[in-house]
Amino acid sequence: ITSDMQEFRNVVAATLNDARGWSRLGVSFVEVDTGGQFTVFLSEASQMTTFSAAGCDTTYSCNVGRAVIINQDRWLGATPSWTGAGAVLDTYRQMVINHETGHWLGHGHRYCSAPGAEAPVMQQQSMDMQGCQPNPWPQSGEMYSPTLGIRS
Image (cartoon, rainbow, N blue to C red; front, side, top):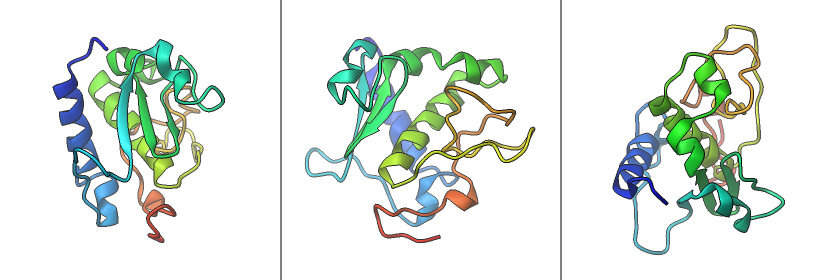
């Protein structure tokens, strides 16, 4: 890993506890030394498949069980889909943290509802904006968590 790990931890904590994000479920995300419910990893792209050859690849970030894995290449440079839609790296980082944590929370993928609409955070915005506008935050319709037993 060549990224600044303190910066990574700071961005993860700020994103997960931002009032626009998953904290709207009424939960707090606190870094602990051991025993947490899930772990957020920053992984070198070449090591992504060590988490799961079936669930992760060297191109994108992923979630496997209690592991939320952010691909360092994406952390450092986002994706053409994201930047091509006029969005910036800082908001990409927020989106990918929220998207992969959303999988841990029990969410599947969602799709663009209409051209020009704000993308659901659970849309695969790293791959294709589907005509939607980039969005790093979960929408009100995404405010539930099967993993935590929180219903919408």
